[in-house]
Length: 198
Image (cartoon, rainbow, N blue to C red; front, side, top):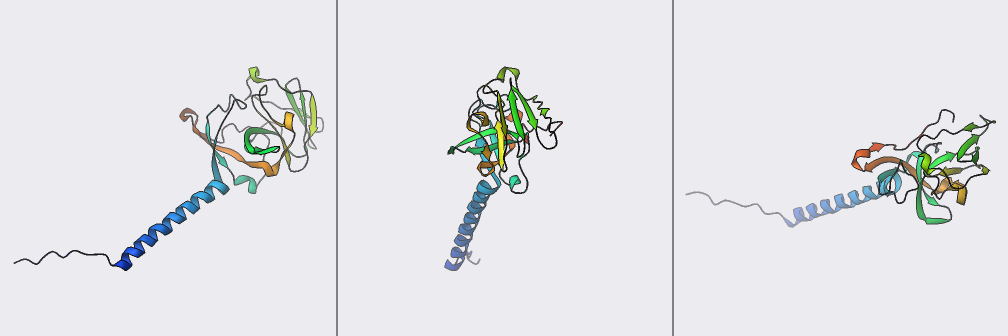
């Protein structure tokens, strides 16, 4: 005669402990996701042609929100920011002028003058399609402390510092860190440019 098979049953205390663990892990996961989303990295979908041909409409990007807490934006960085005149609007542009620079735009050419280069130097911009040159020109502005002069790569359609002025640092969300879509253009720091003379 065989002994009957005994089935284990969870005690109410064990069941409560299991449910508490699941709840705790869920809360921690949501908390971690929110910290990453608001303080470390955030998704951004490109809308519009202002950064063509480097960034196309519907490119899916990850924005690094952390780096500028430890350093400053550099000329050539592609950044995401809120429009000073309308914080609900988010834009993507390239940093052209940094604090202390005098930016001159004449006939689609950009010249930068600063303490290191008082006579100025012409900014080489190989990322621009010659067909995209145009827009506001004939201007000379000096970038103040904690402000930046930003331009879109598609100059003839871009709504940028030529039209609405300097970008306060406090409006910068972060720099473009990763492009996840389209799949044939995946990469880190897409569009980043460094110039022979900074």
